[in-house]
Image (cartoon, rainbow, N blue to C red; front, top):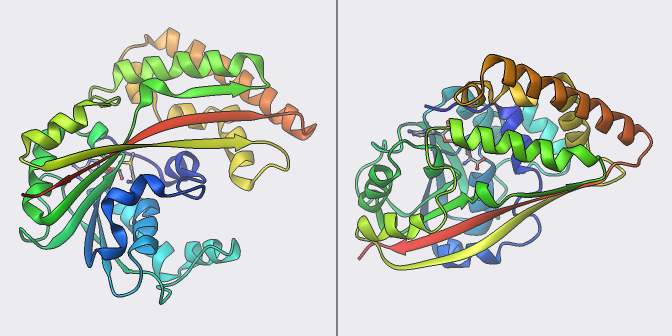
Length: 291
Ligand SMILES: C[S@@+](CC[C@H](N)C(=O)[O-])C[C@H]1O[C@@H](n2cnc3c(N)ncnc32)[C@H](O)[C@@H]1O
């Protein structure tokens, strides 16, 4: 199983769904009573679902990585990290206008709940990380009495523009090497509709959400941390295994050297408040109904 760090998920999900949630309309979240968020990671999407479901509902986050689940629980139930969310005015420890959140360890292809246990099974950025996404979608169709939804990035269509000249090109090179080495289909795109139809789901609809991340002065804490991670090479090292799937040791070291140089350039431009970057990641939101 591909593993993700909490830091990586925080950086990639920054601001997601804060600029509008129209693309989630077909999930009809406000009329759901029990929702499952499969591959919930640190619970970023679980929280969005809990906000949209409103009071009286329950959202159960399931993930195979117990380290990420611990972070998700801490953030939800108000430990040290929960307090950090609080400081940003963002933490609501089971606020009355949100659905209750719970977290459970489990595998996407053998969910730890009985068939028909919920009225929506949803996932975000999970299917593209599974060796056999069709098996998971079939399991989702068994466990839901009504809707199944997948929010999947189209990683092949990511756009980056930056005031640091080399950033867009170097990111594209790294992304292409990562996509080649990853071993699962990380740009599922239109194929999600076929996966849903093959699992027997009907009324399959798709909407698009573009997650736009803007880094402009004054920089957020997350933006500063991301730049530091680029300069130290830590961000790239998170994907070392996948990158080494296609790059030789020398090519990886060369990429890492150029990556860190770029990071130092970004950090320096940030100090002068001259750095601006925009990243657009398109997500397909696919929803189907259990007949
Ligand atoms: C890219 S992360 C997405 C996390 C979260 N949904 C979000 O959008 O921030 C993929 C998640 O799927 C989980 N995962 C991968 N394979 C899994 C499996 N077979 N069963 C359950 N979770 C799995 C990983 O541990 C990780 O948390």
